[in-house]
Length: 261
Image 1 (spheres, rainbow, N blue to C red):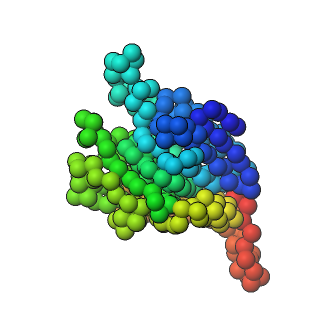
Image 2: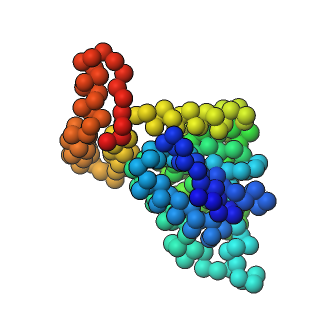
Image 3: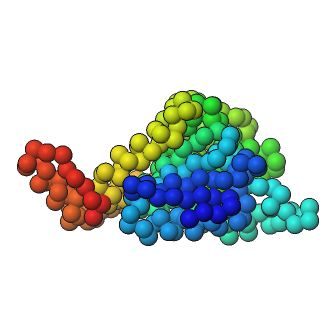
């Protein structure tokens, strides 16, 4: 599947999505976000896809909203309505997707682009990458889930510092603060992300989906509620073919061969 602003390809269980607007540093337009939502829906339904990798073409991952596409003849549109129609659905698709989503940040991740990276399940960044919550510098607040994900990743104080001051932080700082999973050399980024994706492809997909669901729910649950959810999800996992295969492989002293069922 290919659009002018987005490229999607699937091979060996990995769905690779590339932002393809390098001339504007992969800034998000409403069309690009609509196409991204379509691709995520397709990947969610495709049993051949067990992991998704999201990255950008050129020297930036994504520099946030395309401000030119958010105005009409120089007059600002209702940004809140744009979020509801185009931005928020993408965030909810990634959050709810029952497959791991890996973000490979190949350069600048600014504003909504940074928060898109932070909502993914695992984020790997090139050493030259950077992250900036630029919103207050243009009179706005963090969006695309930033006010939800940031305090959960780094706590209230750091989340407010990042959001109010809008300072650019390096990939290594993001890793040290717990915003991302790993930093690698620039030339190793995509290969590292794909290797991680293929490792997950070979694993128990249903268990990954349930783990993601449980951790996402934990922030709003009491301990009692979380224990009940764990029990329900564990029951589901216990009846999967992958768990049966794991038991069989353990008895036969071999590595399990998971199929994601």
